[in-house]
Amino acid sequence: MATRLQTPVLTAEEAVARLRRAVHARAGDFYAMYSSLLGGIVTDPALMVVPLDDHMVHRGHAVFDTAMVVDGKLYQLDAHLERFWRSAQLARIPLPMPQAQLRQIIIDTAAASRQRQASVRYWLSVGPGGFGLGTGECVGSSFYVMIFRGQSYPERFYTEGMKVVTSRVPIKPPFFARVKSTNYLPNALVVLEAAERGADNGIFLDARGLVAESSNMNVAFVIRDGVLRHPAFDAILEGITVQRLLHLAPRLVQEGLLRGVEVGDISVEEGKAAAEMLLIGSSIKVAPVVEWDGQPIGDGKPGPVAHRLLELWHEDTLTAADQLIPVPYPED
Image (cartoon, rainbow, N blue to C red):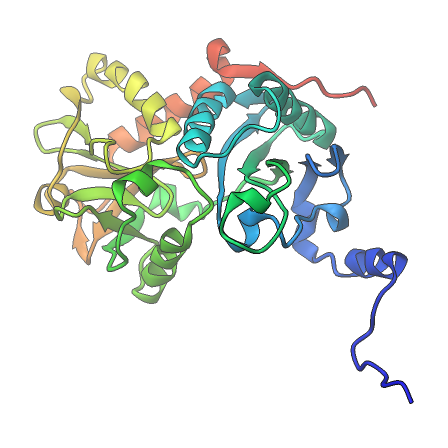
């Protein structure tokens, strides 16, 4: 007598039906996805899936980056793609198609989403083919693009300021810190640790005990002498947003808010004694930090440089023609 399985074995039709029933409420924020395995774009969240044997899933052998759509235009896509190509090269992941074609797929996926405000994330993996470590089993690189609602932070982060703690989580070694890979476990643990300690985020220190970066944000300071200083990028990820703001910051020198802009080492003591502390990234933009390890930064209130840099960022997303790519939305 045949043994009856206690767990159902589904047909393809049943599996797709269950995938649709399993779509959670937040999937309404997922607008469009491209998959090189499908060779096209889907807008049904139930079909926005990645195979388990893709080495991105079970080995983390993949890189990614994130741009954004602002008022119907892709902002700083090419700058983000330059970092994406560098990460892929360092991770030894071959491109599945020419760079220009991958770029066009990102633009087309944004257009298919019909969203005029969104985040644009894309991944490059060594691909599916098995569950080993070696890439020899992979059938070819895979490329995925997702258009989704951008992460929003509490308004109090900008009006009242953020609280941070020095993280006890070890920072990635410099090589891995500079590759934007899908290994974000240390980054996730920093956020969890900060919440457990009553803070909004954490600060990584480098191997020398100097200020490095935050969870997925860069850290900058307005030192007491009126200079905006950012740590060197040799042991941390080169943030696209902070690079743009360092380019724009000399305007604050002209306006008299700053005396200069520098990139160099920052000790914890110097950082805690700063007039202002800022977290900068593509999702958070520019947010003031008013407390670090229970100690106030400056006068414990958001400062003028953080406010003005955020204004410059907003202005740049709307007017910097060399940073903007119009999305060719299909006609309704």
